[in-house]
Image 1 (spheres, one colour):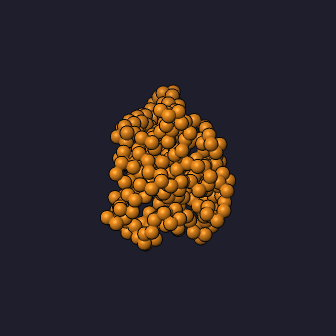
Image 2 (image 1 turned 90 degrees about the vertical axis):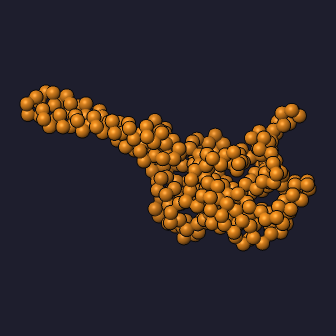
Length: 299
């Protein structure tokens, strides 16, 4: 894909240079021809600029944003909702551990949640990018300073760049907060430390959300729990005990959102973003600087 974009840019650039040189040569001898070539050059400028822009678009979300802009579906002032999170892959034998959503959806989802930013960072984001609070999820004690934010399209790329740069926020090397809140504070587990491996990042395209009725960009950093022998025993014990707070499910159940067609149970019991933690999805994850690193943190 990148090679194709490079060849396209080089071809258009080469044509532009040749025709520009021709204009210079013909400007005095053949003014009529040079005027015609100038018109043609004007027609080449836009595809040349588009091709140059395409070279800078590496991620699929950048390509999708550019496509929407060129189709005049979004513009600089279009509001984009963003939700940046981290999710745990916790697998025991063939099954993945999910936790019940605390916001009353009655669906099960991966352990994890939205990144938190510091108060200082919120001010910086307001000053630089004029960010707005997310108006789709109620702001309460648990969602305060969540990386659920709205920002105008013209600032989106710089915003994402800051997230991976100097942002004062939770970082991937210490994402134990949600693990502690969902599994330790609830007495499901009683661990003091955990070890995990950074798998990579899942990032959607910029797309319109039918649910929230707004364009949005969703990011999820995936980490894999690396339990020691004692912790694995605890997880195996959990799997043997039924609970309304958590479930162990197979990849097939996750892909079907918990729908059991054979038993005529068409109720979705698993959140639609859960597939992102599946092992078979890891090869498609985006690389991030901390990918494949392992961290041990205190809870």
